[in-house]
Length: 352
Image (cartoon, rainbow, N blue to C red; front, top):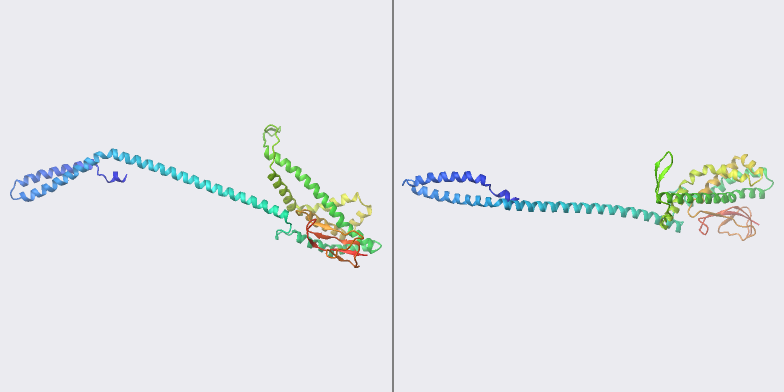
């Protein structure tokens, strides 16, 4: 292309050559005059050299169309090759960006799963920003003994005969509510796992409603697609996380459910006591809320009692009003991170 641009066109050269021929004729006439002979010969020589150079240029320009075409074809090929190379580079860059994004998403998923499994393996790892983390729940549970338990004690102390009966009445609630919440949480987990199986089926066997009025669906033949072990594990983790995140919002209905369930299993005066004591209602409500939140932890927080006539574990329990080595009754349970986990809050025991 550059070579073609630098070549002088024959259309431009022809008029100039004609001009040179015309000047040469004039110089020939002047050379015949002795007065101008020497100067005219020198000028003629120069003009002839110029004409010869122009003839060469014209001859070169006449050969150029083929060269010019070859150069243009070469440049066109090079341009096309450059475009293809640029396109390949662009596609490569886009592929790299796509792969980087895919790796980023996989890394996030793996770190999330690893974090959840690490938490499963080590319950000591908790989110300090969580207001209902295990250490906080254990602290709140102990505060119930100091606050709501004391108020409920005053109610029972006014209606029962002696302190032993009062302690037994109050000890009934944390133990009974713990069993109630455990059973309720188990039922909820089984129900959610059933829904999860249905979700797996919906996602692995897609259908399309052709006629929504008559519920006519386009769907594949009956199949039993296997769900990977990893997907099932993620599903279980999702259920646990969902139960934990929604546990607080579900506590508002627990009080009525508990009263209705336990009314069938206890004496009529039990319900009468609850209905006539605001302090007892608050005590039960607080226990339901905290124990339900304890159940939502993974693994669940455990509360433990000492059996009567057994050795007192003084590392896990403090004395109520009487000290000794043998258990008479557990006044308030101890809190453990999980079944075999470390102690989080000491219980209260009455010795013999």
